Length: 169
Image (cartoon, one colour):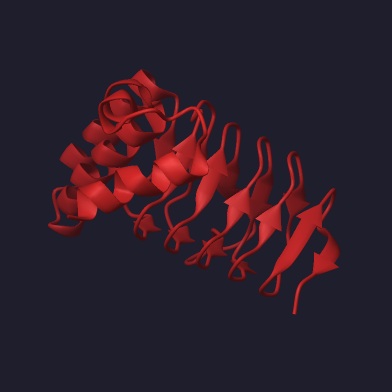
């Protein structure tokens, strides 16, 4: 049942998606997520080296790098995939969409939790960089090539260097 919901959510967000079979066969973001789920399971069961191997093979095949320790909710859609990086302590809520070239990374200044947290229904545009131990609120849209270094409240649109251009209350 969860798989049907996953494919249905992709079809709703991607007008090019024609069928579940097409999505399963040809979407590298889906392949990366399947590998991530395996790697995350292994990582949580203290098989960290095997998890890293699964992750490395997936990165080579898909162009998407997801650390096995990242926490990812339901129905994440990575569209076009190439160049996406999701760091070790990143957390992603449900129903988020990430486009190509996005980095959910650290700034190099922190220890411990050093990657962003995306709450639910977040859209991160192509090439955007979301960096550091920050929280991106529910229903936020981050524009293409934006750089976000500070928390963003719910229901906002962010462009450029962290500039909030619209708040929907």
